[in-house]
Length: 147
Image: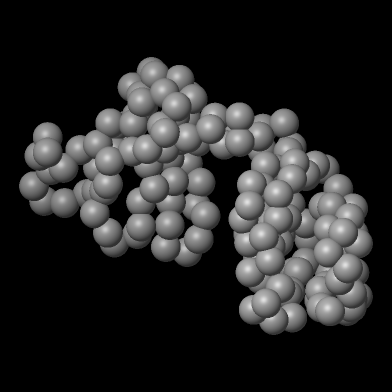
């Protein structure tokens, strides 16, 4: 990456997936190789996001919602019709310990909402109540959500 006078976020969403979102100006992106050409570079402009699968080829950037992308700066999380497993993974970034979902059916439940990241256990309690889930705790660090 090379900033071109910009404001941008780099986010490692999964072990094999990185996104770059540009809030102002532009970022040049490329994959290190022996023969970097102009064709192998991608420019990501204001309001765009580049998702890079590690080890893969750079794809053209796409439009993104900057309010959602930068919400973490205001300690908020926007989730729009995404699997519960994604919400749990995000909460895990702001909470000491681990949160587990008992089965694949729970992982694939879709959720929508704006959540405060200041108190992730309160978010977890509200989500559990809304989805009528049970919670089993092992100490204060490990939480298992189940039916």
